[in-house]
Length: 143
Image 1 (tube, rainbow, N blue to C red):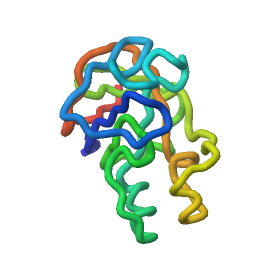
Image 2: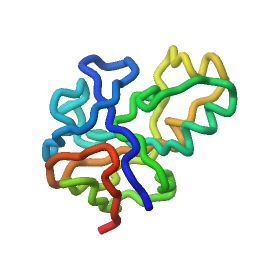
Image 3: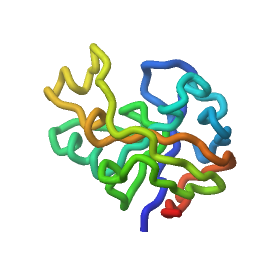
Image 4: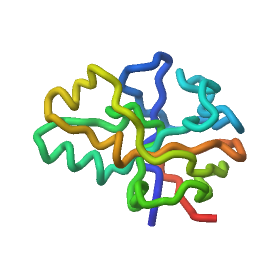
């Protein structure tokens, strides 16, 4: 079963996000109160699989959910294989995959330590098609 392991937000861009029990997702904008909310039509929500984070943990890094500034840390779904346009029901929301991967920003501490980072190749972005509440532990369904 694919599920939400953690929801992560921050008030500032460029910092590790903190886990929250639940969040309000705004249609066409992102997570209410998150630094990235409303800034980008394509990259409203970032998702990264815990399985991807585990690859970095295997290199000796102690990482918590949100360490890659992802909004949703997932479990049980191979995100990087989802085609753009795939629709997901996550909690009360409907989200659509809008981008696979991203450019790593300069000065990424994880990449400096290890020489690599999983977010640029294994993270994905979604657009919020229908807003609502998402909670840690919610199931992720294909629709």
